[in-house]
Amino acid sequence: MNEFGLVVIGSHSGVWLTSLLEEYKNKNILLVEPVPYNVIQLKENTSKYENMKILKLKPRLSLVKERFKNFILLSMNLLKI
Image (cartoon, rainbow, N blue to C red; front, side):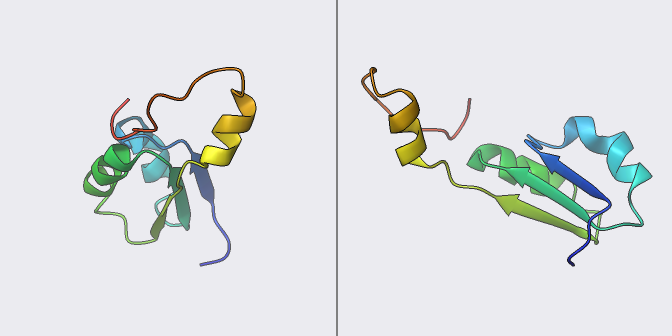
């Protein structure tokens, strides 16, 4: 599965992707989502599509620290936003 007809970065729970997924159901689909809770929902909401891959990204703390270096990080909990 190297070529994709549809790539969605920030797929969330997939609820709003229904029409796009139907449009590209005969092509390979790549859905990218970093939030674990959303990935669970995304898998449930898109389970009928066989030609789809869900890529779960992990947030990179080093990027967060660099971008917000003048702030104090109290929590890195991204389970549900």
